[in-house]
Image (tube, rainbow, N blue to C red; front, side):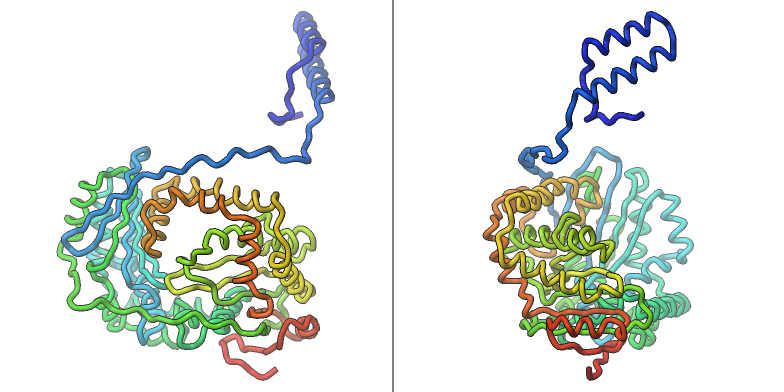
Length: 504
């Protein structure tokens, strides 16, 4: 029998005497029997109260190291946090070269970022991968909507050669026609495959429904198959020359290095990087769409065992003064395992393995999304439960227990978001993206702790309106349509997977 620490109790006097007697008899079996008897006696004498969770202490004040800044001669800016406990350095380069800079070539930013590791300097893709492994480093390139990010993590002892390789990727990418053709075919295959996956189909349909065609978020970040098919070495190089410039670039460095050494290393390895002449490219813009009456969009997936559900609409700006209250409200609604949506759909009804909600923040306001993959036969019932929870958090104050649990969930998890060099870099990037003070997180917990039950209800009523929300469901329409229409939440339209709407 294995006892947990919380089940152990001090031995009684009689238990100690039993063990002492057994020891004097020098019998192994007697000793074992006495120990088991003593443990059983101790357990029977102790009653554990598992109905009340332990009282949590207030979260400790978070004091993060300061962020040093410097301006490099190339035109790039350096942001650095020293973390000397581990001999590791994280170098994150951010370029204003995300999907909003695609121009007339949807998906070109994402594709160009992917091509960086396919050959640079004198190395092909295999050579790049082999050098990364030899140096014990990690080197990745990825494009989001606003930034292309090149991230390097390397031990201090191999940082110099690793920065050489990183500089090759950024300054000397090969962009060979054969590599581009291969990667282009792979991306088209991925796009076609995604059109057959319910979750990906739901994402595409949701963005197309929520955002107008003039808005950059209306289309997928990776582009569509027809746009990608037109990519070639010339188009990739043209985008690279336009967007991969030192002017406006940001280096975020975290780890076992000083600001002076970081500036020296970056200036050395990225020497000759053109700053760029004239004005920097402008990103595509779009206004937050106005709320529309609730409507349901069904996308057919014949024979689907599950339905992929996304419910939501246009979200809010990260600079919104209600941000703290929205974070607490969403944590209660669908932002944690113990949230109302997950407890309802997963634990109470068993409709899904998990349900969640989130406000997605970007420089242009992203969407609010509540989603789950549910069994086909309970699609309508699941939608009904989503709307029950939406109305509930608007119509009544949350309990003190719920409120404190949500606040503790956010505050007690905050320090863990700064444990590693990579995590620290990501949080600094968030501050830069949304123009927040570099010491913003030092007072974050106090803002979260100040949220009241009335605040939660207020922002729920303001930003979560069941009468003005988009519902997208990908599933077997022949099975789910009648039940969904019977709910009466809004008019139902059928939409083809590629996005072309048809009449009901």
